[in-house]
Length: 173
Ligand code: ZN
Image 1 (cartoon, rainbow, N blue to C red):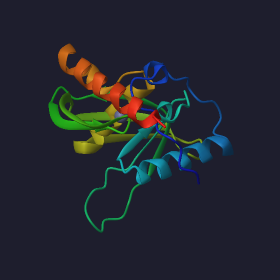
Image 2 (image 1 turned 90 degrees about the vertical axis):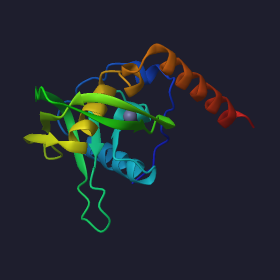
Image 3 (image 1 turned 45 degrees about the vertical axis):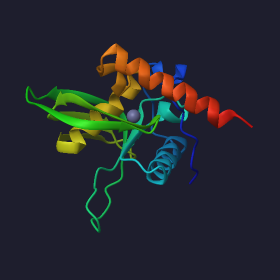
């Protein structure tokens, strides 16, 4: 497995709508495993393919946080939200493409999601709590949307300027 570099906002690839994947090939399974490795290494609880520059509808997540609990690595191909609750919950979100910046975002508290698994089989699951927030955040990435897009323009611009500065610092020899 390979840890892939994570793109930092602003980057046009993070604003692009990703394309659905076709048949689940070994190459796609490898992509999913690399994404999990990259996510755990970061560390994070979710990662979408555009964040490593692959514009395909693939996301990975594992929202198990309890110390000592068994991990639950998930790879979702072509995920789709088929139902959202009217109830809203608010979480302080962050993003591996926007390091060290956090903000409260309101989202439906529960969602039904349909996707294709690593074996090419259709799957469906009802998510709530942190899992529901995470899967919605990652599906947003597949649609070129970031959590800061939910914030007021002033706050969003402030975070974007910080990220531009961070990128300049990182590329300086
Ligand atoms: Zn993110």
